[in-house]
Image (tube, rainbow, N blue to C red; front, side, top):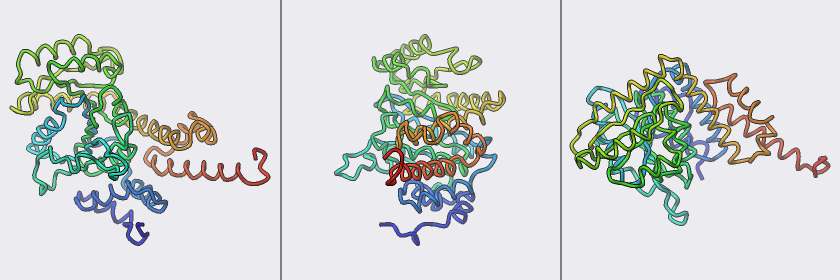
Length: 340
């Protein structure tokens, strides 16, 4: 069992993370992944120390989703190369399938060796994380981890596990969501028809070097892509890219930058991030305590009000709500309670 003395001081760790020390970032992510009560308390203090206006204004959270075999990891590697050449720092949370519980339940792909970049690059940090069999394609820990990384990297990429139609949680994390499609795959259009089409802001048809098949898929997506779902004034571009030949990557990243500017200029970026944080708090509380737990807090509306009062400290408020529910459960089950 991890001893309290082994846990880092949150405020000191926050200072090191803000200096972009790789070891500190790794230590912070490990703390957020620790389920011990004292670790959770220190996690809340860590995120509070990192919080500020920059959480709502700076950086860019980009979600990469799509079916297996589309080449998401190869495309992310190509994107990283472009960002690093331009001098931008990059943090990556690569969500992998979970191994079987008897094997430890960790990430099957380990340290995401498919993304081949020098581990000595101080401006790049890659963390592989098991999805813990979450059907939404990302693990619960991705929410606080992405916000920690946003405190110290210009770009934060979240690559989902690649399970296809169920990958909807990424819509509640990323500022910009990119769907990666594979040419000549009937699955792509089926995924888009299933409702996932409402999620992406940018579509990327990878393996454009295949030629006609890639152009055909891009045309099909273009006909299916929404034009009036979440943002009426956004054009939902469809990009032809090839991670193998490194073509179309620059243009795709320009669309990513353009989308972030679109949100910021319209005054939607901070509102979007706050809405995403509230959605994750409600989701985690419901998963742990059910609808009854939410009702003990006064329901979704009152929970939203409490979170709105302290926008920069959502994780700490989430921990306070958890403790309140636990105390109410104990009270309800005490001998002599009206419900016992």
